Image 1 (spheres, rainbow, N blue to C red):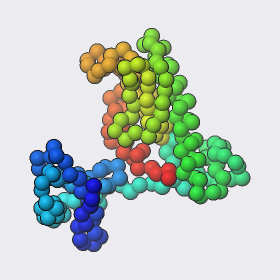
Image 2: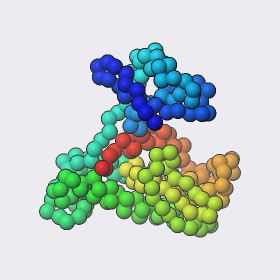
Image 3: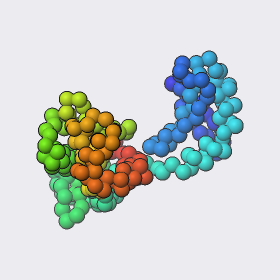
Length: 229
């Protein structure tokens, strides 16, 4: 994958992707990180790609301006935790710990992101295990293991073996949203599809699922824009 530079103020870098399956040129902007990608059919020359970009420059710059900037986790700032901003404060401690509604951290900027991420992952594992246990018991089912990942394409999944996977970033969402995702994946233990029967099981486990699904559609990208590196 190469890139094309669209001159202007500021210049815009567009990732160039070749695809043997593409039948036409297409331009997309990631809502997660603002990356612009131009997909070209295999035999289309780059000069046609650049002409395509120039024709759509106004559209491209307008949409890039609408992308929210990434949030870099740092002491003195905040991070979302259970749907609320959690202050990150320096303290004479060896590891992250919650005290009086704030997360105390060693005053070492190079490790702040990793320490905050480790704290969130631990909290997410406990919360998701608890929610999964509750909904599996209500359904009369058992699951295999729980794994946490930093996935961008999905908030959770359930394998045919009954293993559950969740995005640990769910701990940054309101508690009801985390619970909904757990109920959704546990319901797959009974129905490995998205049929009416599946949604009926979700409804019984978590009646307010539509509001939580709407929250994820509207605000989910905000969770992915937080950087811990």
